[in-house]
Length: 431
Image 1: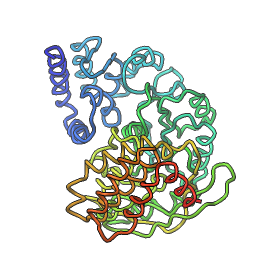
Image 2: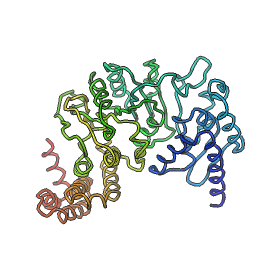
Image 3: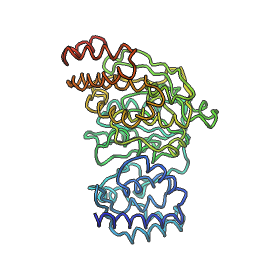
Image 4: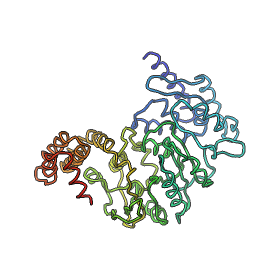
């Protein structure tokens, strides 16, 4: 414990030195850091990347091994000296400090963080930390072992009628040829990052956000596609909106990933203050969203503890400070298939439990209906997962919150028939 405190004190001392040249960037980093759990040095190392060329250049050049109890660097004094030197000189004159990909790969092999791609280099083998011109929109695509779907997702972005964008692909530790697929596009707009362990979609999106340069940030899941006019219609709407609007979302079409058949449409109809509505039901699909960058600077990033439902969590947090615009046009193809995260019942249960606990006070203050809805959904998940006892408990809580609502009673009675019958009834209902 003593060594851990000493190491953290050294890191804080170095960060105080950075303040002399990077006080504004550090304030933004600390503002976002307090919203996301994790090891302190790891987040400072990662989050300096998009806001400070000099600091990120140095911090990425040194070895960082981060776990729950220790932080190691090649030389803390060397780190301090390099940061001071970088802060005093222009970036173009300090290119010799920019690490090559091979250096980064060797140094981060056993630690946390991510790797830029080998293809994202100039002719001298140096990584291009920032483009010379900043795009208006940054498109963040997290991916994990879905190369064919990813290919279609990338093509759908490239085919946009609005072309002022960059594509940031974050590989969440895929075990297949994802990097080769991305590099096969040979598109200078594409930036590729690979996580060194599987951290989930929230962490992958966070890396994408923090390495983005656009005024607006859009998300696209690797199993979804955009229609060609999506950005063309969204960007002007957000540009012409007032300062109290933070994002815009669109209608989507659900399609069967195997047959390509359209299953149904999910219309975007609600605009303005959605804070209360989102506690009842999530009306915003992640792949349809375009957000102002300032939203993340104000409210922080995705909660990495939540492996599912992290999108609803951040929409709620954004809605507390910003309003939403919506487009009724169908501009996204949302693929339904068996490998979706939403098919993992254990993840769904855990994420729902975290969300209920996290927003308990807000639910009670806003509406019992919204709180009851979450317990009802949790009861269904418990029963589908075979735990009918916990399912009945969740249904009972939903009944107490909304005694006049019919669905919790039906769920409770159905759970008395056992998990097998419950699953069969739900399957028939979904058909």
